[in-house]
Length: 167
Length: 167
Length: 167
Image (cartoon, rainbow over all chains, first blue to last red; front, side):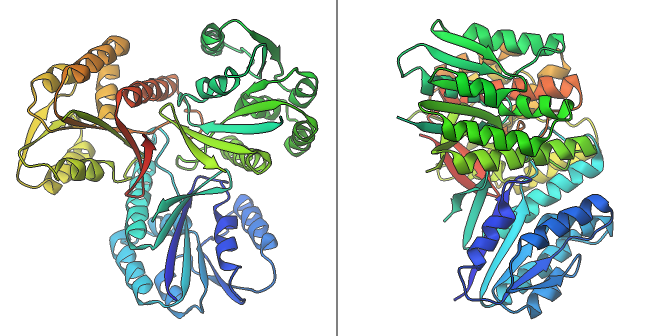
């Protein structure tokens, strides 16, 4: 029973809630891999709000950068929330994004059980004003394409409602 | 014959035109609730272009901030254009967005007749550079989710073509 | 065998690849109309990456601004990549966008054979900070609507996967 689902959506579109709903129809415990790192009060409040919503039955693992390794040893079913913060952390650390994506793909291919990945759609605004903004937008687009190619199911969440993209 | 429809889309995606088309298959008169306030020439031109496109048979009510009240006394069918400007006006006035959304939900639940709400998708670009931009993006995402949960129908307009999101 | 397809999507969503896939099921040669102009190293690298991916069988024509004329004399099937850069070039040249769009529509109506247009969705972020940004976003939205109205098929590419928008 292997299945990989990619949940895409804009900011505050209900992506995390949709991803949690996919896991929680399965029997607990569920593994939540968090990629967020709290640098400031705004981020801390966001993380706390996400944690508060999750019910009992979740085990949380932190993987701000070492997502492939953490994913490999996580007990299924697994929710990864989210690839956008993972990518952002990698870029801040000036890591090799291509190599990290290769490692993530290898970890996903080697896994058994249900995995749900959450990621942001960030490419539907005007061209970002800064080179870093453009680089991030491009890297996120490429990462989403690679994950979607690997995934069994892809959904785009719009105002809390999932639109089926694949299959 | 109660029905609530939420029309989502990006800027200049044809949302208003689509919303008008839903109302104008019903017999006139139709009520247009405008949330725009003209602060400058750019906004005035935009409002004038919208008004010019609407044919005879429309009665226009203004509700830059008091949308729940105006909606409660409007004669159906009703088009609200749009929630994004309403939210923006509320934020500029430092109003309580949560309380205002509760009031809007209550007004929508109490209504009879056809209501069509227009709102923007604003969360699919990169993270906004300013705290206000991030706050607005998040508030719009939450508002869209709450309206979509309440709505009978949700559409995402892409280049003038409606994509059915719900049901 | 006339058919006009519009491929929409965000940055790095896989639009170009999808458009190429539509053409390359037809027998070669295929005509690629490039609207990109290399102003800087970032743009040169992007153009080179696009060219490198295209296999033998493609003839490339450049049309940074004179797209209607180049399209009229191009041998089908034709891929136009992309309308967003064309629009950007026209705005930089302070050209009349309405007149240019009229000319493009006339050229498309007069054509025979398969034409695939690639264009960006740029209106789903927050309101751009600059007047130029807002003007570009609005012009792109209007152009996409006009092309979608003319097109036989419209697809929105999400993470490399085409979503059918029209018909």
